[in-house]
Amino acid sequence: MKLFFRLLLVAFLVTPVMAYCQHADSLLKVLKNELGKKKAYDDAKEARIEKLRKQYEQTSITDHLKQYNLALALYEEYKSYQYDSAYVYVNKLRDISTYINDMSRAYYSQIKLGFILLSSGMFKETFDSMRMINSGLLSDSMRKEYYFIMYRCNSDLAKYNSDKYFTPDYIKAANAYIDSAINLTAPGSAENIYYKGLKHIGNNDNAKGSTELGKLVAPNVPISMHFRAMITCSLGLIYVSNGEKEKGLEMLLRSAIADVRSSTKETVALFTLAEQLYKAGNVKDAYEFIQLAKADADYYGARQRKIQIGAILPVVAAEELNNTESEKRTILAYLGAIAALASMVIIFLLMIYSQLKKLKQKERIIEEKNELLKSVNNQLVEDTRIKEEYIGQFFKIISGYILNIEKLKVSVETKLSIKKYDEIRAIINGVNIKKEREALYHSFDHIFLKIFPNFVAVFNSQFEEKDQIWPHEHEVLNTDLRIFALIRMGISDNETIAKILEYSVNTIYVYKMRIKAKSKNPELFEQRIMDIKAVDSIE
Image: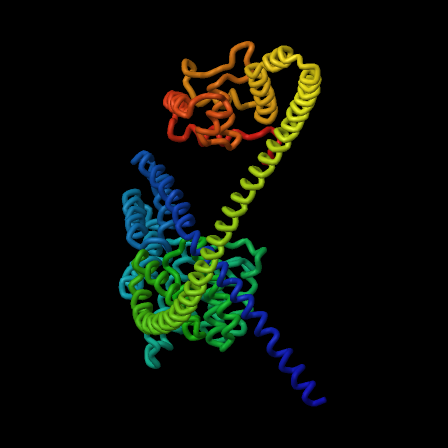
């Protein structure tokens, strides 16, 4: 039971911390995303500045009040963005005020000068500038700003010196000025709350200070983005000094986000955030942010900030270098492992490729054999059909011849028995060999064309039109066609063809050579003839 309660207590303590860490990680992603848009924010600010600058240049030199207001607007754009440009326009404010003999505005120009001198880290010059001001000639709003700058001068110098002899006097002076500023603000206003919070912080009462400042960071409080950045930065510093690292980190992240969105270059948040991230062990982000903070300080011209950044930058850079080297070694180890694995994969792939190549070769051989077998089968089917046709016709013709011979035998025997020898001679002379041979050719031609109906057309496709051989109207096949019909039937021997057609061997040879010579491709002519397919052959 005790163990259960201990675990429950640990859970209650750890859960808020985990929630804060997750929130900080979420804000860190937001900040990185906003840093990616930094140029867009800066471009928008530059566009506003350019618009104001054109208005200023186009303003008549006699319209001093409008010139003053436009120079003041340009100063406000530049005061936390770029020191040199802000300095140019604060001098214009002072020149215009002096020209129109308006000492109130002239002193107000000195206040504006004091702000940028202080932002740039020039304490002596700030005090010199502020001593020239006669606060009695200022309006309440101007005097309030004067008191606040004087508060910041003394407060920042107290922090910078951190000396037990002089610091108390600076703190005392700072408190007196902030009290004067508070008296000039409306109770409950954002400025009133902000000044009270700063006073409590200056008196080391961080609890009251954070309570006051906390009233201003709610999303529905109508304050500028730059003002929000200042407040959240102050809260972040309070929480960090109180040991509340997670809350401090969250506020510093919020402040840095607001600085980016407001294009503020004179900023504490990003530098302090980098410092805290470094202490938390997040060296990579710390190095990135401190470089950005240095770039902002260089761009603005903040001397004090550059000194602060210069003190920590080498330490963070060295740690980042160590981490980078460690990551390189890790990456090299991974690359070595990947290379070894890749080598094994390549070896296996080569083995598989070799096997596949052999398999493809075997498949190709099988395919070739199958094609050959198919061709042989087709040839067998074709030969079978030819044999069937011709055997049938052979039996029909032979049967006819047997009947005729039988009739002839009976007739001859009858004539011999009665010794009518002259009539026997007449019977023998009545046998017309030429007619019988023509009947044989006629039968052969019809059967052949029944099996190979495209023979004549395919045969003539091998010749130019002038050399083509077509049967006459009364012919089925002529001698030229019949020679190659016999060849297509598989009778290629010239002597056999000569006997069938009743020609000499030499005549058959001459016929063949003459016809082949006229074909489009004599060397392949007989092969083309053999390729002619029977109609019923299997494809």
